[in-house]
Image (cartoon, rainbow, N blue to C red):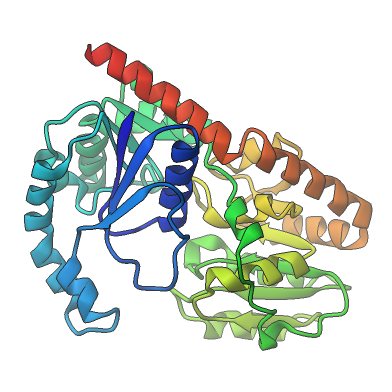
Length: 371
């Protein structure tokens, strides 16, 4: 079976490449059509082909080039029209569409088409966002959700027929546990003596970092690390951190894959206090490293907790979060129990081999329906 995966803007290269590798291991011939990722290295292709055929001129100008977005927009229509001529697989699996409302009308007629709903819609979508989602997802023969929560939103909010929505778990990012070269712990994080509570990932307002810092003010006996590239003002977070009794360390920059293992291995507890989420790439990295998790009860997070791998707290509740942090900082056995469940999930229902098995079964079903 020949499969083409399409992610024009390289929004999720770790996912794209992990899925491509797993499908290839399962016997598919796989090609990833994408653009050059400008923020750092990406996983090496394993038995699948990669063609960087989108936004080539704007990528060549570099990440900091003036008017990069305008150049990228100018390339978009020609690149999408070229895609119509170049797709030739048995199944085309779209990971993202850069301009969903427009792109739905530009898709090549080749079928079957599958799309992964990495993010369905914001909690209160605008009319334009809802229209774009309905056009993009509605143009597909099947849409993959990472959780039952996402599947419900596709059916109930977007309005897709139930038989076109499938739940296939996002795999744990286990490639991070076997990188050929790992970087040592960044100097900013060296020297912690007690348990380390880790927040990792892009710093954005919806991720509840302020709630975490409020909770940490009532947590003793641990350090808090806030690690990731800022997409918000950091100074208010630093002011909150200054009121904490324990030490708070910030590493506010892009973190390359080679740096992730040392940070994850040193962490004793990974916390995702999000106010809203469908899922999180950080969650799947933490599962791969067998890390105990404290998660807000949003999106698909409760489904991970059902595996025994996480403790849930209400979103935006610093008191509940402080209670969970205090409990697990003091309870090494409890952390170990959660971590062991996380490792089992990563090698079982959240493994890439299981993801590939279910994905290929969906492809075969769609091909048979096509006749």
